[in-house]
Length: 373
Image (cartoon, rainbow, N blue to C red; front, side, top):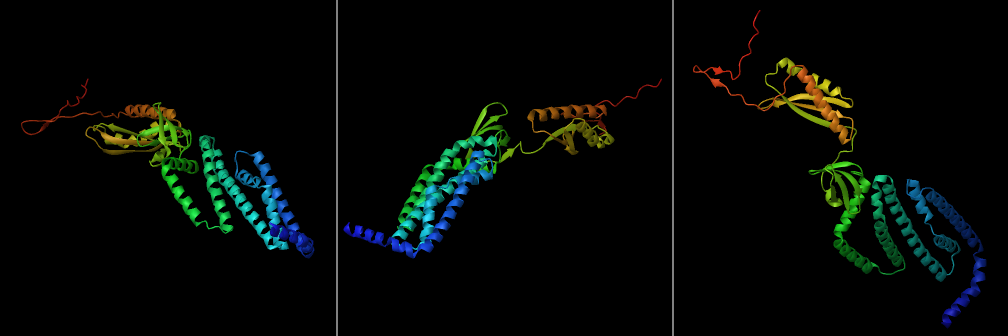
């Protein structure tokens, strides 16, 4: 203790001489440090103004502003001391103490900046669409996980710069992280699936999607599950991981919906009328506002009909309007074709009877010509 006090008094007695010998360096270092602190104060003030104007991460400027606003005054002071020490070259013990303080302050401040940047990016994506605000419930969990990871890295960086062997610590943290990951594998998989939905946006709340044999409208995207309302009224709940493993058809992504209509005509339809079927079908489709004709072709020779396929686009994503437009096109097609004398086929079987000489007897009566007057 006496030796320590003696060293301290000896250093204090030599302090005025050291100040006089390094006065020029102290002035330069102090000016540089003051300038740096002033710049950081201005940036923090700008960040606070941006954050107060847009606290919900509505823009990328708000994300950067939140990072700048988290610059601590303690970090500024220690950074200023480090600059002065660099210029003035103080005694070894003082320089080492300032270096240790700067390492601790810089690692801690870096972890805070990184945390705010990561959470800001996630918050920006969450707040970019009001349909995704349900995922904001996950922000508390994400904030804890990000904070633990970043500050653990900061502690390791500090210890490593202080000369501590961190190999065993890193190995222990790695094994512990693996154990926790295996224990909570299902929770983390659904969490990352929710984040994948958040960033990639395969669907949003209000979209109608189809997967496997199920179709429903997305009502809520949660941390673990997605809830949908089926077209028959019941609620469907699917884990986020399981949902992303399936092929998803987003029925809301598009400007129109293509409808397919198949119908059959009788084999007794004259060829000239068959050639006019695409033209008549186009007129039937275009008679309905918002419907666009694509094509109408004969697709095959069925057992009892000449098979046709009609394709047309409906300029709407509303299921009720799509159903109404499809019904109107069918009615228009019936009126148009029957008005031209074209008959629709229905499942029938025709039996031909052979006469004793081998000729076929018609199974239906031949048309009788009208009597002449």
